[in-house]
Amino acid sequence: MSTRDVSFDTLALEPATRENLRSLGYLEMTPIQAASLPPALLGKDLIAQAQTGSGKTAAFALALLANLNPRRFAVQAMVLCPTRELADQVTAEIRRLARAQDNIKVVTLCGGVALRGQRASLEHGAHVVVGTPGRVIDHLERGHLTLEALATLVLDEADRMLDMGFFDDIAKVARQCRRERQTLLFSATYPEGIAKLAQQFMRDPVTVKVEAQSDAVLIEQRFYQVTRTNRFETVAMTLNHFRPISTLAFCNTKQQCRDLVAFLLQQGFNAQALYGELEQRERDQVLAQFANRSCSVLVATDLASRGLDINQLEAVLNVTITPDPQVHVHRIGRTGRAGEQGLAISLASMDEMGSVGKIEQYQKSESVWYERDTLTPTGQGPLLAPMVTLQIAGGRKEKIRPGDVLGALTGPDGGFKREQIGRISVTDFSTFVAVERAVAGEALRKLNAGKVKGRSVRVRFLEP
Ligand code: AMP
Image 1 (cartoon, rainbow, N blue to C red):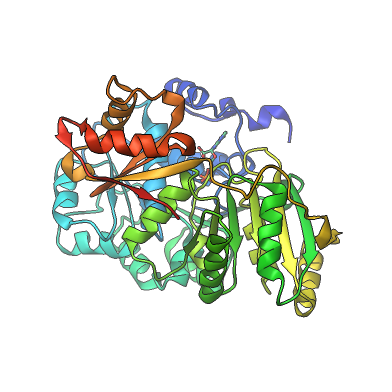
Image 2 (spheres, protein in one colour):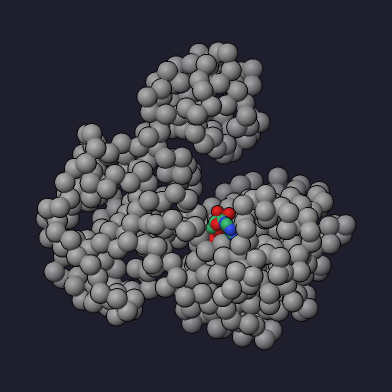
């Protein structure tokens, strides 16, 4: 593809939108955007094979925004997502991209949050709704939401929604939309249900696919042979050798996730487990700590990790090889985002060599093996996360905003430098603030002694 083809200027976008894209640093279309935006902007239905990190959100967000009439106060676009986290990320990306247009209201509808507030937001007028199927249906059935004016329906991570058993819910929603709508379906893989969805709810869809190969060149894959007994120890050796700031480590089972985390904690690493059965509140805490760099290793199952949008992931570690080569490619695609080189380490024991063979066939390349004893420690001491998270009791419900916390820490009473403070995320009932490890104790003391928004607050360490 020539450079001209990947410029956003080749698309029929408003000048203000183009300017906004430049201000966001989106200078060229990603491959999935270059493939899907031209047909989507022509109003065609679309089935796009794309993974997290490919820029897929902007691909459908730009299309749905182009279909909107800001002066019409009705829901004109809806994005269905499998999880609340993904819905939050999609909402944030749509808002960023909509900055150039007047007052576009985007409302998120997910479970685990009171219906009442969501209903009020809908009553205030929403142009775009982003939500999980169950909660969206809830609002439809209660009459809080109507889809008569819907111009664009997006199914994001459709494969994952099918995995989670949402086929009937999606069908129910689709049946309530106008026939003349545009439907955009994004999916990383093509299980059978996708064709069924397309057949029932899409009109003559265009299929676009971006070869996974294009990313693969930016990922350095290293294989190490391990035994059943030295596998966990080898995980620790790779961490102390490569010293990645953030690593996503994949296990095939939940039990293995728990065991590995227990082992890593005992060895002094900042590690946490992410698996299906965590409560939403626990999941939020784990993800907040990983995203703000106070947890170095997130140990996850494949299912739990899907839909995560984490930037700056230096390494992916396959603690065991997955028997499904497509899953392997999906796993390692999490590193090496946005043009940066990533590292994918795979540990395989003799009885996993069959799976390694399948991966080689699928990727059409031979795996490169390294000796385990080349994994010597580098740097000083065991790998520690650069930041520590402080949890403040109180969040959105107490009207705390990130600026209030930053103000308390960098103002005259706090005395910290802006650079010593990391990401501040406010959830309904808690606020998480990352601070440099070296000043964490002092920050805790000062916050507990001082005030945030004119009120005393309770603060504690949240350490993996
Ligand atoms: P996604 O696959 O939608 O989760 O996007 C992955 C990341 O790429 C997000 O952080 C986007 O903000 C970013 N992104 C999307 N499109 C572009 C683009 N054309 N240029 C640069 N970054 C982009």
